[in-house]
Length: 334
Image (cartoon, one colour):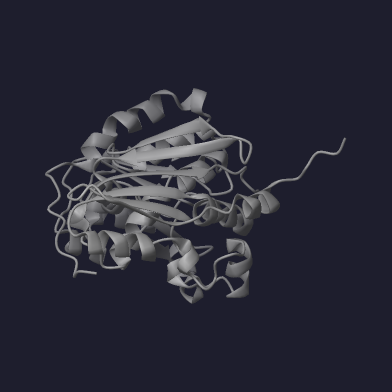
């Protein structure tokens, strides 16, 4: 693999492009099952599954918001192996997935700071690119500028004021310019928007493998959508399993055939020593420490890498729907 070089990203604002999607989320709140609250400062908080019921439709829209308006997330009826699938596509996959969708902004507060329970969340979505606190943005050579931003948090309670103030400060936003969307993974919207990261997981793995991001020009992915679990670890396990064992991704690249073939060979989750067991089981086994899980596991099950410079396509990996059906399915008794 080559040493990563700046991705030469276009001068696009993911926060600006996401605004119509955020406006739709607010305007259709009742139909989408979400609740909208503005505090005394004008800060907008959207509850998409904490107290509000949320919905799969809300999760689809949040998925597109996370991609900064540069991706499409659609629900599709499946075949005999699973009834519902998510299809994701972007013609700006580096910007949409790594510059916006990736849950890479660590936001934490101690018990002393909150006056109660400690708080931790990973922020995803366009506002990450306003703060640009992660090393990734230096590698991309890009950050966003906008007077309004939206951040998605996979949490089961609103963030404390100390965290909100940090987001406002780091994003250089007035309170009325920030929208926070709360999507617990155990909710329908939360499960949907996490499974909609199937393409982002492939992009992140490609980056970790050292593939030149500037050479990735298009991306598409699909993954089965499980029912959410009311239990937190199990809910997280199902969303991960959907991608690790049911995710299929095609990356369209430029450059050498050698690099494209090596990417296809090394990318699938089957390269991991932990492959073949449910994510929830693995997570419990390592005492809930993500860093003890083999990083090679975090990838889609099956990949195609197509090189537009040569016209060649490479394929590797395979989905394991039998495993997912054993994990997710309870047959009705006659």
